Image 1: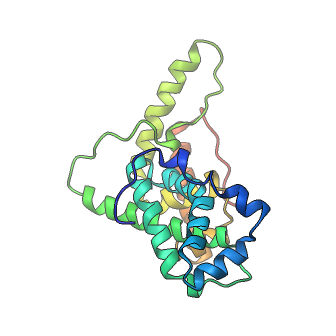
Image 2: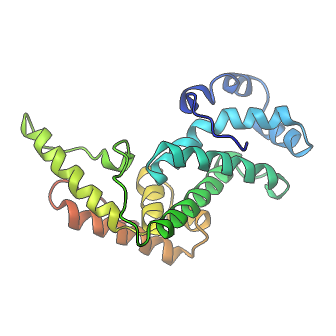
Image 3: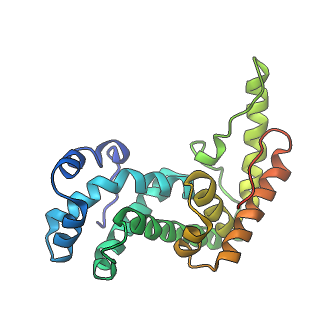
Length: 215
C-alpha cells in the first residue's frame, strides 16, 4: 500500500467482490478472518468499502491526489487496528471514522505547509464548489460563476477543522456525536466547528445558497 494507484481508483475498486459478500460471506465473517491474518478476507473488505472511503476523502480534501493518499492510509491503519475493532460495531462506520481522521490530519498538514506560501489555485473538481444555484435561464451560469468565486473564498477562510466538520455533517450526513468521535473532539467543539463553517459560507454566499445549522 505504498504506491499511489492512479488507474481508475474510483471505477475499479469495490465492484468485483461486492456481490460475493452481499450474497455469500457475511461481513462479520470477513472481518473475523482478516483478524486471523487472512489477506484475502481483508481484500474483500477493501474492495467493498473503497468507493465510499474515497468519496469521503475526496469531499474532505477537495482533490483526487490527496484523497488517494487518505484511502491508502485509512486502510493501512484499519488493518493495523483490526484487533481493536469491536465486533458489535459496523465495520463500515468504524472505517469511515478512521478515514475522516486521516483526512483531517492531511488537511492540518496541508495548512501548515501552505502557511507563508501563496496558496495554489484550488482544484476545480472540489466537491464543495458544486453548490447549485436557483437562478433560472441564462442567468444561471452567471450566478453559478459568482457562487463558485464566493465559495472558493469561503473555503480559503475555513480551518482544517471547520472544513472537516462541515463536510462530515452536511455532505456525509454524520451526527455531531459521530463527528466528535471521528475527529477526536468533544461534542461542543464539533458542533461549534460546524457552526463556524456554516457561518462563513452564509457570509460569503449571501442569498445564493442556504445551509442549515447543526442540530
